[in-house]
Length: 138
Image (cartoon, rainbow, N blue to C red; front, side, top):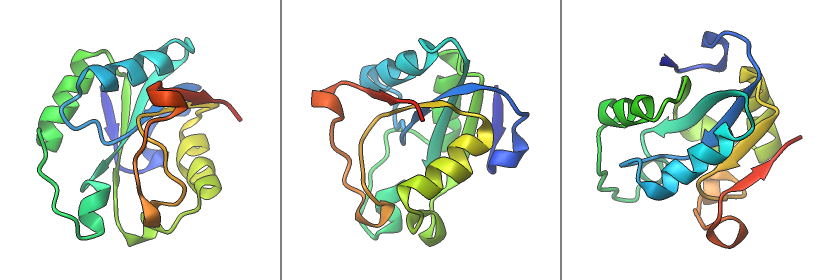
């Protein structure tokens, strides 16, 4: 499994991307990854470290370390991970800018989210599509 911290570190490829923190990589996370893989493109996950809520000063008790999270994602067959440092600069990106810089930057015509949010500065995860993973292409 390839792990990158910037989009340019991954070789160009058409990817289906699952986005989320994936702490613990539980059954719901697996559904999101499966939905991305169903696109029959190279599978990738975009995840964050530290957890976005920690960046906003909220206490976060994680189920697994970043290293363990990567092990679990690799065991699921994820081919590429973009592990983004979640900081004020990333938090300030509008959704369209995030999609352009991060998702299109790694060749993703399709993304599936584990939670929905408008702007990272008001990060409030909530279920997509009635609790089901949401897939949207450009």
